Amino acid sequence: MNVLAPVRRDRVIADLPPCFRKEAALQTRPAFHPTVASACQEQRTGTVGFKISKIIVVGDLSVGKTCLINRFCKDTFDKNYKATIGVDFEMERFEVLGVPFSLQLWDTAGQERFKCIASTYYRGAQAIVIVFDVNDVASLEHTRQWLADALKENDPSNVILFLVGSKKDLSTPAQYSLMEKDALKVAQEMQAEYWAVSSLTGENVRDFFFRVAALTFESSVLAELERSHTRRIGDTGSAAMRATCTCRHPAKNPSAASEGTPPAPAMLTPMDQRGATLAGPEEPSLPLPSPPGPSPAQASLARVGRSTHVAPVAMQTQVLLAEGDALLS
Ligand SMILES: Nc1nc2c(ncn2[C@@H]2O[C@H](COP(=O)(O)OP(=O)(O)O)[C@@H](O)[C@H]2O)c(=O)[nH]1
Ligand SMILES: [Mg+2]
Image (cartoon, rainbow, N blue to C red; front, side, top):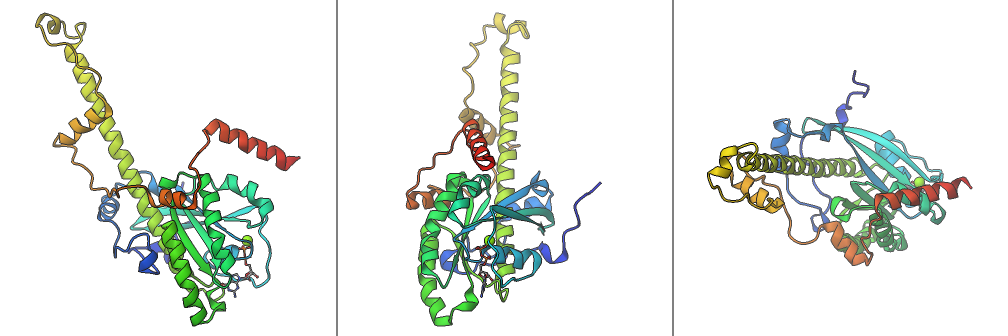
């Protein structure tokens, strides 16, 4: 039984939505990555259609995070400010290139006193959306710290970043273009994709979330293909090992000892297995993009000057429990 409601017709993505500014875009290709497009066409997207991708939205108090999510998910705008308590989330279901894809949009509180709670919800994000108010330069300056905090809880090589200027309707074109220069610099420095939106008028809100969904989907499919490729390599490697063992093991192949076969080779290293497999005709190498050097998020982290230390799971659990205790006390 399918318990999920069908995807709304206005959440169907058939083409890669364009970026907002070429100067600060995660990529400027006009279409989905060809590997992703063909995997979707041939229904080789594995578990992507069943997964929920987590997107966290962070930024100073009152920059417009909740209004941004509400404008997209509920098509509403509330002029009266109600501070978000702790965290909240909305689910949005899309269909991208014919594959169902769900986003969980986590709205976090901007107040200092909620930071310790929010940080536990930062974990496992696939994308980080850092919001600032285009009319408040301090909120732009604080985005570096928000990014550093969010990256502490995530693997920087696995997250994609967006820098979003909100309340565009409140600035004149001249004020906006002055501010945009600074915002583009910050986005480039973070290696984040830059957008400017207005939740009051709705300007760019839908386009922005479609872009988030499309790029998150693309990276999920590429990761899935890479995983299944690695699994296949592993399978072939162990099959090769089994074959090697069978023919050289004296108990299983008594003739091997008497035939004076050379001693069994040392264990194949993963590198040997990969080399052997990729050379075979049935395992063509996958044309996955592999940018040289650090990932964008790693580079951002280096720039914001934070360590990438990620606590082991047991330690994280302890921290979680300790934080839970603190909340209950
Ligand atoms: N004019 C205008 N006001 C906005 C916009 N987005 C949010 N606001 C107002 O800014 C205040 C804070 O918004 P909210 O989304 O609650 O901020 P948050 O603390 O970041 O979640 C509220 O009074 C909103 O009505 C916008 O795009 N334009
Ligand atoms: Mg809020």
